[in-house]
Length: 376
Image 1 (tube, rainbow, N blue to C red):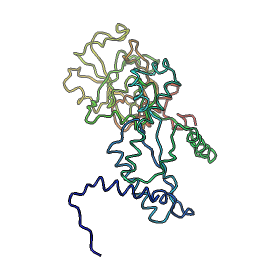
Image 2 (cartoon, rainbow, N blue to C red; image 1 turned 60 degrees about the vertical axis):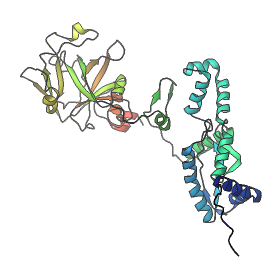
Image 3 (cartoon, helix red, strand yellow; image 1 turned 30 degrees about the vertical axis):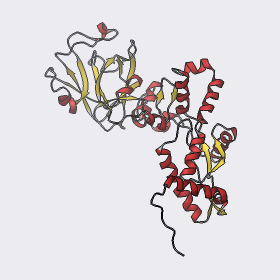
Image 4 (cartoon, one colour; image 1 turned 90 degrees about the horizontal axis):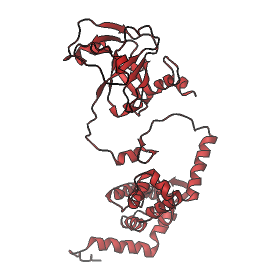
C-alpha cells in the first residue's frame, strides 16, 4: 500500500487537536485510566496547582515529568491509583492575591472585612482559571480524571488528612519538638519554605557584623575587672539581632580584656553609670585580638582570661527599642570557633546556640543536652 503524500504545509497545532479529538471520540483516556492490574496498583500522588493564576511553562514542565512516570507504570501493566485532577486552594499566595484585589494592607483589614467573606473571595479566586488549566492538561496529553477533581478546601479532603494523622498517632510516629521558622510581620503568620522562596532574591549581600555587648555586674568574681567593658561579638546573620538571647564562647579558648585609647563611650541608657569616660574596654578572643583591633590604638597591657567556668556573666545590649535588654554569656562546647558568637532563635543557629540559650531564659546555667533543654 503506498504512503500518502506528506503535506509540507501541515499545521502541527491542528494535528494535535485532531488526535485529541480522536482520543475523545473513542474514550481512549477513560480506557487508560481504568486499565492495568488492580491487584498490583501504582499509587500516584498528584500535587495539584493553584488555579488563581494562569498556567505557565513551569506547569508544563512539572506535569510532563509526572506524566512520564504514570505512562511508564501503565506500560508495565499496573493500574494507576490517584490519576485524578485536583486544585490546591490553600496558602498565602491565594490570600495575598485576594488582598491585592481588595486593596488590603494586612491581617487587620481581613478581620475588619470578615473572615467568612474573605474565605468566600479566596474560593472564587482559586477556581478562576480552572478551565485554562484543564485545556492545558488536555493539550499536553496528561491523562487524568478531570471530571472528578479534588479540592483541598473540601471537607472530604481535609478529613482524609486528619485520618492520616490519626494513623501516624496510633503507630507512635508523631513526636513533639521545636522548629524555628520564618515569620511574616505583614501577614502575621509563619512562612513555609516555598512561600519564603517566592520572595527570595539572589546575590543579596549579607554582611557579617561585629557588635559590643555591655557587661553588667551580676555577682561574678570578675565583675570588678570587667566593669564598663563590652564583649565584642560576631554574627553572619545581623537580621537576627533583635531576637538575641545570649553570647556563645568556647570554654577551651582564651579571651582578653583590651583597653582602647581612642574609642569614645557608647551612647546608651544609663551611660553615666556604665562608662568611666577613660575610653572603651573590650573582651574578645586572644587569637583574634590583633586582627580585629589592627588599626585601633590601644594600651600595651592586656588581661587574659580562660573561659573554663560555666558561670553566668550578665551584659546589657542596646536593642531596637530604647530600653537596653539583659542577656547572658553562654559557655558551650558546641561552638567550634573562638569568636564570641551572637545567638538567637534563628534557622541556622538553633541546633547549637539558640537551643542552649533557651535554658538561660529559664534561669539555668551550664551546658545541657537536647533532652534537658527541650524537656522531653
